[in-house]
Amino acid sequence: MISLLPRTFALLLVFFSVLGPKSVAAADRPNVVIIYADDLGYGDLSCYGHPTIATPRLDRMAQEGQRWTDFYSAASVCTPSRAALLTGRLPIRSGMCAEEPRVLTTQSPTGLPHSEITLAEALKDVGYATMCIGKWHLGRPVDYLPRSQGFDEYFGLPYSNDMGWIRHPEKYPGLDPKADYYAGPLIRDVTVLEPATDQRLLTKRYTAEALDFIRRHKDRPFFLYLAHTMPHVPLFRSEKFAGHSRRGLYGDVVEELDDGAGQILDLLRELHLDRKTLVVFSSDNGPWMIFHEKGGSAGLLCGEKGGTFEGGMREPALFWWPGTIKPGVVRGMGSTMDLFTTCIKLCGAKLPADRQIDGVDLSPALFGTGDSPRDTMFYYRGKKLYAVRHGRYKAHFFTRQAYGKKALTEYEHHPPLLFDLGADPAEKFNVAAQHPDVLAKIETIAAEHKRGVIPVENQLEKGFPPERIPKVKTIQVEH
Image (cartoon, rainbow, N blue to C red; front, side):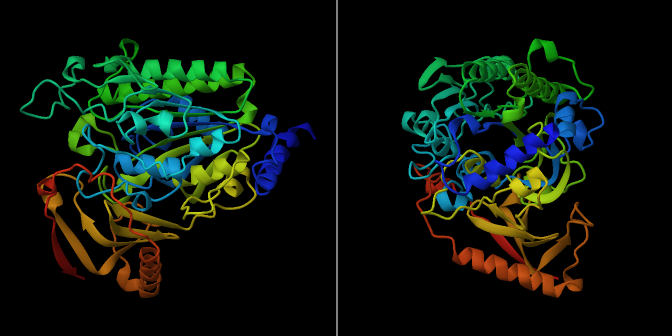
């Protein structure tokens, strides 16, 4: 009987959360920790098959919890993917995506619109302590930093760690990572602590901040969003992890992330919070493979960061909540957008009713009462819908190289390419001719979706010179 109590508790939370934010007592609300890597590939963890990167702490997290095989970010680059996670909405709905710039820059005058409701805001409204640690990339001006988006505290870099570099001005220095080449500002709340922080210490310091936050808030519900700077290029790790991995520098960086995640799980156990805390580990987009050995691996998947093939948006995803989450491998579909809806319902907060929410509640799959309710995924590149997955099939209306000069040419396919991701997750074999009915259904889904997207003011293009927006050539391809 005792072994059934945690599962029963979780099911009661799901039931009562439907009734509204006041139906779940504060003492019964679970804590939420989201650990978000940057540019980590689908194949970069040993529990996802990497042969030379050792991630024993995340492997244990997967064994004690759930490892999802078909889990997606909502975008293939940083800014839009982070906006989607925190709002539960496709970036096209908030204006947080563009052809160029693809992410917010150091000079962007704006950020995530204040009209958007973040997960932090929703949980803060029902008594949660909230903190963002690490890479933000949703607005550098003070009034767009995390403190203005529902977080009580912030500690981290406001944008990617390759921005603001101060050496080698004639070339991008990502392949020559020396700490004094970069001027990334480390911020506490709204104050710049270090104008050019030592990135070798970032992962270590982020983990220490996370542990401190958990200790300080062990007696009340809390939401911790730990968005690591790594393994985005340039790669840095602390002295302890230098030469730690057989995979070289990239492996060292990932193994330090693994160690940090393990420390967080250990502290939750030590404080007896493990059975009342949901911990999620995932990544914002796929690996930056143009940097060769300094970038990660998408495993058997096709594509990389920046593109709409699977490798650009399908991510590792681990869920951990001992005694509540049913351990195992989940082969249903999920998305980082679903964390918004799932956490709001679990925590007794209120789901916004005045806007389109794209996230769904993953509780049935998490608690073993059913399958994931997600059956469709939309793949945007900037403001344009490139592909749609429905069930096991994925249709590409447009394809394009992720980066480089060839990325200025897109290919429009007639009929669209169709891949059976159940049999062919590497997207090698076009089966459109064999399944015209499937293709027609996905085309209908795409058309209905586009009709439901209301144009909004674009945030990334603000202040960006129009002449710098590249002209993309479209080539029609008949199959």
